[in-house]
Length: 281
Image (cartoon, rainbow, N blue to C red; front, top):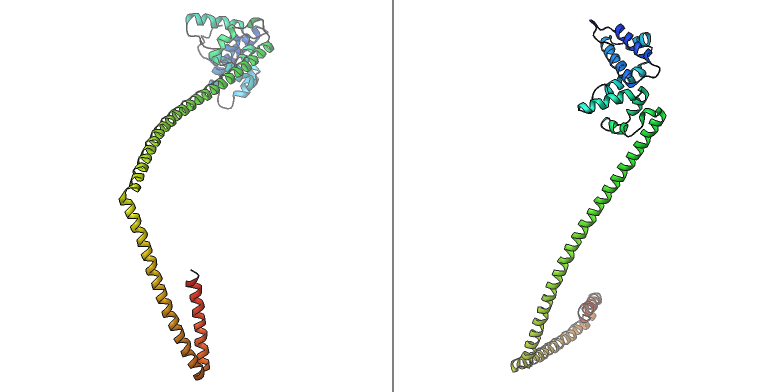
């Protein structure tokens, strides 16, 4: 059918679409592409809001059906395999596929569609069989992707464990080296201690050390003796002062009993305070 018309109108396009619809009972993909192309053309010519009405009155399509035909035209209406051989392959595929099969194949990514079709005996497959094959392909692809993802995660976990293992090995080697250094330091310290101990033993045995020890002993004895004399002197003075104080208090009792009682009470507090603060310490 020639597209060379002096003026393209929605009515002419509708007549062309209807002629394709009446050509065969089972709509082949090549016919569906031509119908979709003309629907796209008609929609571009119609005023806004007239699309649905035009479809019903002129071609007896719902908007949903029209959209499916237009989508098929966009997907299959151009060469995708990129070479003269590819064009032959596409032409052959367009002749084999039905419109319903082409719709089902839209669930297969465009870049994978040709390879998928080549693997099937698609000419002898029903739409239901094709849909099942597409579903099984999707499930297999999903399982493959999940397996690849799991493999990547396992690989990453393995690399992480290897990195941790290498880090632990470095830390272990560092600790081993530090242990060896500490062992050497310990040996050096033990040698120094032994040397100092030997020198100290010699020093103790020397006459000078013995003389120093005797002087320390004598000095301590003199200090003890001096302290004892001072304590005895202070004690005698305290005893004398206490006797004098009690004598005066005895005189005061005959003069003023109240004053005597107050001083006697203060003296008692003072002595008890001295006992608590000084003698017990």
